[in-house]
Length: 194
Image (cartoon, rainbow, N blue to C red; front, side, top):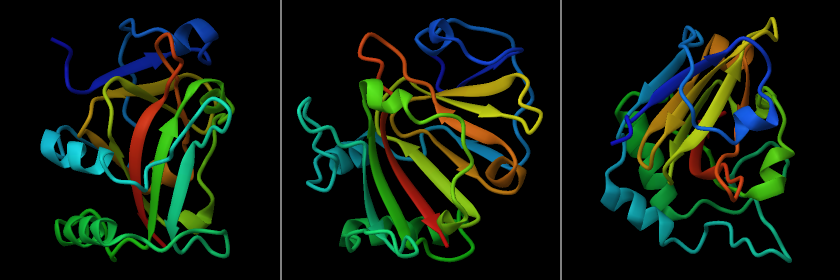
């Protein structure tokens, strides 16, 4: 049985082989401010979210990596659905956010398009706290320190989550690491408070 969250470290930048591999490597220290939450959502919660019509509807001829809901500082976004607002309120009440989230993203990190998202720090319009909930198994996310040397990675299964704040939010770059034959980065539900 696969462990719920597996953390990995590489001394160099990930190669194509690394990105498509799930082999174990040594552990690097977790980025400051990065919190991991195994099984934050139940399998029933995940099933309910995956049935929602708001999820990106990707087809080979018309791929869609993500959909935005809420206030993204002038960037076009839809109005959040009541179920999103309910999750935002619930997670804020549980202490994940200092204010109720006003940004919601549903993502499907598929194939070659997923690989186009390089190491980055999210735009400041996404606020100081970003919670990412995995909707699928075996999602790999990498975090690279300001030095650019080495990286920390975590494997998430459906229902697992990570929260970026502080240095992990503003100083460490992160990247979806596509894996498997489909080179998928998996599906996620992202909440942030701006």
